[in-house]
Amino acid sequence: MKFRVNTLKCYECVPGTSETCTDTAKQCPSPDNLCAAVTLVTYTGGSKDKEIKAKMCALARDCVEGSANFGSDKTVIVSECCASELCNSQYISEPKSIPNGKKCYSCEGQQCTKTLNCEGDQDHCIKSRMNIGGEIQTLKGCASKMMCSENPSVLFQTYIGSGSSCCQGDYCNSASSASAVLLLLFVSLILLVLFF
Image (cartoon, rainbow, N blue to C red; front, side, top):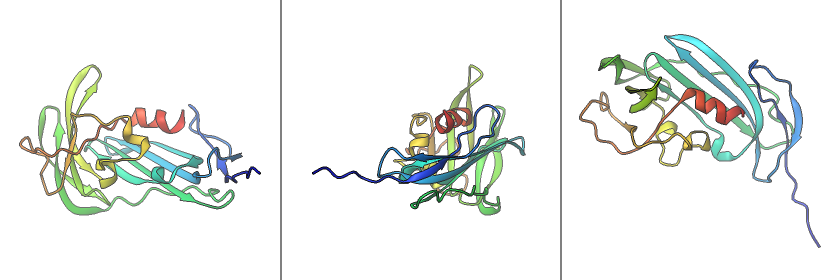
């Protein structure tokens, strides 16, 4: 006798290029899925650039909250998961950005000696080398532990590269920093992973 494994029914709302969408009820593909509501906010030059909200079926490891702040650019992702039918009816708000007392270096052009005050759960300093417009640039800033995890959420796994590292301690992301935890965060690519 074969038993059918029940899966959750969750709201799904994945925005397209218009950044808006309509909730539809969807049966999740796996009994391991939870219902999730996700908010992703990007900032450029200190101003909110985009706020994208989505609902979907997700695995527990993708129920994450964290941020990476490179000074001029910041990304915040918050997701909340639940385990009952259509429980992801409400979106969640971005947490308040309150300075937490930790300090890391950030870059302005080629100079990477500017002090950046970390916010919220940003308890690590990060150093990255990224290809921006065909040019390799060094980025430094603050990041949440979730962004620096050795086993990060699948939302970030594709973008881990050997050119990035995280460390703990004020200003530990200086030129002499030699931490070995990896992260490469491209906001536009994360959006692709989340919504396409």
